[in-house]
Image (tube, rainbow, N blue to C red):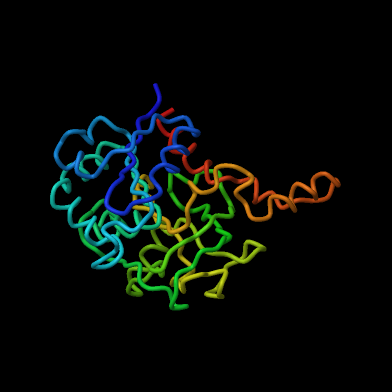
Length: 269
């Protein structure tokens, strides 16, 4: 049986269609559900195996990115989401969804403790919105279910508040626990070391995504749902031409964002 993925929609979220499509392409049964339908119990969270907080600008980021969504979800569904995680199910937060997860305290979730906000995603150091492609290096030490078998990948970012920030002791705890899943990197795959535009927002330690201690709750700023076909990559025509000529091609561009969703489906085997 296909795992069921609930993709949140409503109030300024605008990546739900692509996210649901990519889950379907990966082999899940995806359903776009309005936040109110979940809060009003018209749809029950318990009937799904995957919960996706997608990208967009929930409530216009009026009080900060992901803040209002986190307040509404936490107030009405806080306990239900904690049970969802305790039951061994999966959660992903992409861009605005990542911002919501950290505001909810579902990330980083050190030692299985959820609810306390310990990290933040704040305004980009460059002072403006970034819409570009980045290279991502994935940690082999991470327990993250979503990134199993992935070493590097190219993904687009589009955000104004994507700088990962936390106190030094929290960053060190993330490192020690292996919860830093992916970092912004140079074209070679080496650490960006804060270099702009490879690190598009100034994130501490080039952090692009983290997971909780179980590896089942994952948040990242880049958009994997926006790379579910080779022609989405900005270099796809150049890559096609190099292949036609029998020339070497960087295999990173073949790692579609779909792989992240396929790992989630495979987890339920």
